[in-house]
Length: 183
Image (tube, rainbow, N blue to C red; front, side, top):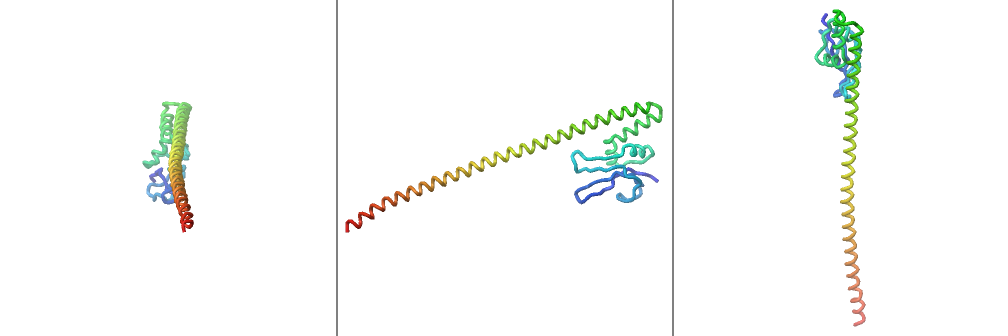
């Protein structure tokens, strides 16, 4: 029975979520599986991967072949490195303690790199929001200035119209008073 480590798709349309499973290579993608090793969520940034590294390394050691995507995920989480170190232990090239130390050093460096990337991503998002807010403030200020200019122009036009009306009324009022006196 050729076993494969592959992804099993779950989730709604346009919202994929995967289970990382060990299955017979002959069954359908979302069919029966032998063991669930973890989950993979590609929608988060960085992608969320929960994986049982020990069991995955054991399955690789037993001959399970990962799919291309599963191989990348296993490599990212260090399963292939762990398997490589275990082969060295089995051959007697290094001791189990040395293999564990090497794997833990790699794991700590990887976690630091991921944390750094996550903080950079958060800072970038924060800066984008800040820039958008500043651009919106500038835009609002220009709109407010344009509205104030329109109001000022309207007030000046209204004052000019009132002045003209008063001037017209002032000219008509004396003329109207003189006309009845002449009669």
